[in-house]
Amino acid sequence: MARLALLLYLLGLLLTFGWRTFAQWRRTGDTGLRLDAGPAGTLRWWAKLLFVAALVLGLAGPAAALAGLSPLSSLDHRPLHVAGLVVTTAGLVATLAAQLAMGASWRIGVDPNERTALVTVGAFAYARNPIFSAMAATMLGLSLMVPNAVALVALLVLIVALQVQVRAVEEPYLLATHGDAYRRYAGRVGRFLPGLGRLTG
Image (cartoon, rainbow, N blue to C red; front, side, top):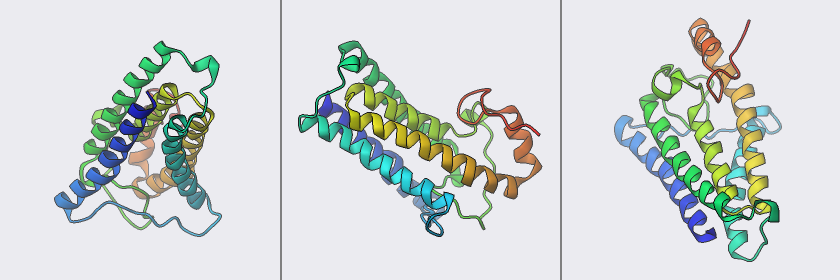
């Protein structure tokens, strides 16, 4: 199961970062990569650092399992491993589908001076951040496939990174850029899951 988890993780990185970036460049002439983390110590900087750490730890979980790190006994059960495989696969498909749904507005990172169209249809009609929701589901699935301490830490770090990125970086940017249009959208659509985390006031 650890080999399969590692393969799926690498495939996910290749598709959602590599192929998606190439496809964006082919379509628009712009890779969509906005990798500037801003000044060290800012929330934007911490969000990016935590996200990179989560990606590295996500790779390290299956690698550690292959190297002999023991799984946590409470989670080391075949049905959970199979469930993890299903969740991981579904999460990868959902991540890529949500990325594609953004069209020309797709970005990795935020440029505070850039204005892109606000996407509110498809998966974005049910959650404001379906890409991140799907990524978290993928990491959850991987942590069930290889339920060791490293994989669980990867899941925790990713969740924290996504919360910081969305709440401290992306939502302020979207409010500043789209104003009332984003407020109305965020008032009726949940942050990561339908109905949960709607903006009020």
